[in-house]
Length: 295
Image (cartoon, rainbow, N blue to C red; front, side, top):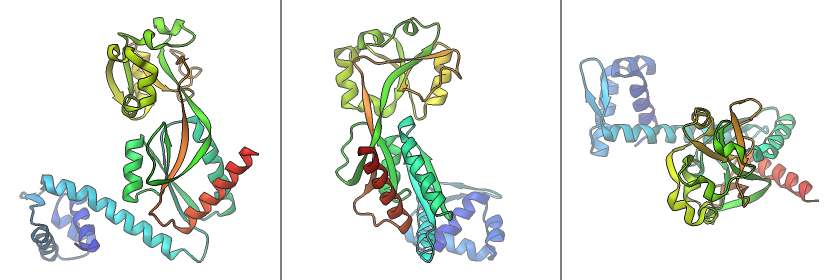
């Protein structure tokens, strides 16, 4: 399976038909059709349901399209990193969950970009499951992970600051009248959390037996839209302090959990991944920042 053929395949999917893709790629339509037929024969699957004007992906075709985008992106990124050794340039590919505690990392990146103006940043937002997948597939080199996870496969660097858990509720909710929220306060209350929160041992230990009586009504990936649901009074949303600003959202309040539940931020990168030059610069700068903060 050649990268060139995967690029052809990606273009066909984006155009929706072979003729449009052939025109965009500046090759003949019969040649492109032959390349796709050879790809199907090589893989032993049918990639397209061919119609009169439009093509439709089969289940196998959809799977290949997802993987082909990752492969071609990784090839392009690797090529750029290798070709730019003469100057300090390239892209820092870093993923992070939502948290105010990532600010020291952003401050470090600002310092790096000031010293090396040709460096660029690709910032991916997502939960730990998404970020670990992208780390493992090489789509990002670094991830800021939160909570307590098994990171034996990664190099790690603890970051300063902690994330304090609490709930966001509408101002007219009975929970808004409390200064802090106990597990018993949440019994029977409609509650939305991130998917990873419910799986964390620390959350289960905090909730104790009351967890069996929590009324989970859904989960979120990023918290902003979930907070809009909380504003309606439909549920409480469990999140980190500071992600939703009560001053900006007058109909919402944040109440911390008690006993306090906090997560630390961890910078992680794979042990078996040889970092590009710009990645090594990032690690060096982060170690200096961490050292200065510990003095």
